[in-house]
Image (cartoon, rainbow, N blue to C red; front, side, top):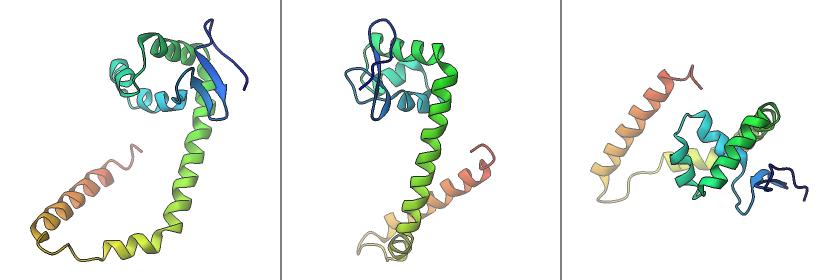
Length: 131
């Protein structure tokens, strides 16, 4: 493992990529939430990071923005490819499950769930230009 870090080795390079030392949290995990404009305190709490760990991650990202963003794009591309692969691998199973009837006695809840799903899909489709 090669260490590449700020002055306290708070950010290290592991087989998973740039990682916050002492955790399994990568800078790409943090970048997901930064990109979505979540508050730093929320991200820190979500990943159970100390103030020092969060500040080290933010400082490293800022000091090495071009490198981190380039690696982040690669990670996102790989994630999309994997998602597409598994969607294709499981397409028939997903279609089969979607056609299954609701569990006995749960018809009302099932209809509400289906209506909610349709509403969510319509909302996402209207914002498709954003993604």
